Length: 113
Length: 116
Image 1: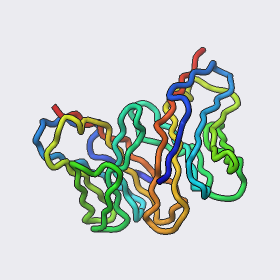
Image 2: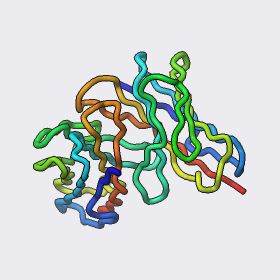
Image 3: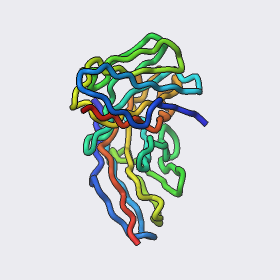
């Protein structure tokens, strides 16, 4: 089974802090994704990566950046955390073929105080 | 851009009753279609997918969905609800194509409540 592991289940940070969310997958998938999930809005794509060191903006990239130095690891960075970034963050990975489903981690519930 | 509509943010059924969760998509070209389930404090788990071939797709936990091109729909059903089915369900679509650029567009989710 595919395993997508997010480093923290719950995280509390303060406004202005630089925040790192880490995600690791163990199936050698080419593609990795970061979403945020908010009630009533479903999942919205922040960034995705289709190869090492490659990244593309999703629908809501403002205030975020990403890093993919190794194939198995995809990091989401909040450069200067703000309260409106309090949310559930989900990481996913998928093989190269578009018809394959994405596999999700358990999520990180991030609170910015 | 793709859009996905899930009618009903909350659906309540009795245990043993039929479950019907609705999903419509906007693309004129049939996309890849997925249903995911999310239990409390967990990530999303794939229930089933439609990519090509038979339009009635069977998934895990007794769920199935039918792709209807003429109605641009992919509704999720289960003949008999169980208490353990209580969760949030997401419909998602992806454009057909090759390579890594295929992104998923999600609906806003339907919270299913199962009552005794």
